[in-house]
Image 1 (cartoon, rainbow, N blue to C red):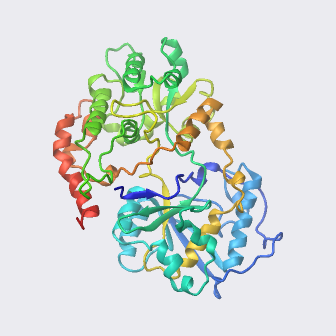
Image 2 (image 1 turned 135 degrees about the vertical axis):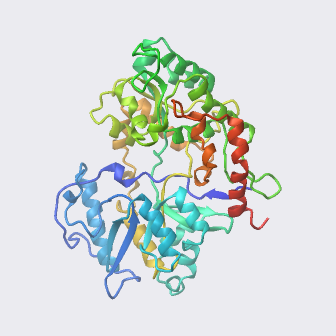
Image 3 (image 1 turned 180 degrees about the vertical axis):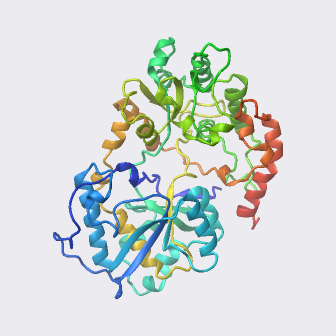
Length: 493
């Protein structure tokens, strides 16, 4: 039995990545007569969304140029006009309250627990949104849409309730927690281009006479062995000083957390997933054969063959590794459009960057491996104890629907095509989201591993590193994983 069910198989594509904008002043929605909602407030209510970054457009914005990164006039005007409509429809004002990443977590864990939520709705990442739901900090949508006073009094239109049906909604996606069969987290539905492909430098592949990874992929030969062989060839002491340094050429560089996530999926493995062992109990997968293969491959990349660089200093400046590929001396890296835009804004690699799905591990299957980990990604939750949660949900639903049901506008892929650099790369990214493989909920990032046996011990190099073996890591932490699963999911067993 699976303990999570994805009710709509698409992930949120962050609105901030689309960079929508234009020019114009705040007006009273001159083109449409606004029909008041049954949830219309007699006194104007301000609704605050606790988040960790600035977003557009809300009641704080009078002009589409309030967004400093405007580049799509039509979409920006639609967003701003939609905000004006929502204000009049409900007599509300909507604001983003930038609490910072740590501030959102602190606010959830203190203000909600105290019975006075600081925000009316919280933007959450699954890594801290999931524990908040499990702690009882969020309203379930079944209550909001079916059992709340507003629902009982017929104040909520059926279209908002559609998210709880098997057909779901084109506007809102939800996550169902089958431990109690209810929905707590929701977000904006969109075409799924949120996957992280494996980027590679086509110039280096050609220069060293290697097979293009995309050709391996087309021929069904894209596996860990072929990938490792190419990374070994591309790892070069270009400074000729007898020691590898960050300035040398590396087979791979990127964030180790993203690398681990992708290796787990490519080998059909998990560490702390919600897999039933057949007895109705959720069991740790850290010591399973597929996970062991992943950890051993990770160890080989950093320790045995030294094809990837990571030392203690990398934690202080994460971007040194994430953006290193832009210098042109990295063979493979974690590739996402937002990373490409940040690292290579002038598109110097436009003719040399390739993208491919991740190679298949020995326990994996290229046809059925998942491509996206649903334990990451942005969702929203309405905190328990907030006044009139039905109003808040319906406002957010309308806010997400800034395109007025025209999915062709919402799913405009122009930005993604631009930062994939070519059509082939874009099709790789799109295929990852189009895959019918099950999405993965692997919760290993929620677990605090024994301090002296962090996963980083498997990969850190350098004079100050204290390497550990995979067996040592597993032995020290398998009970921590099981204890986490028992506490949160096996209580009734």
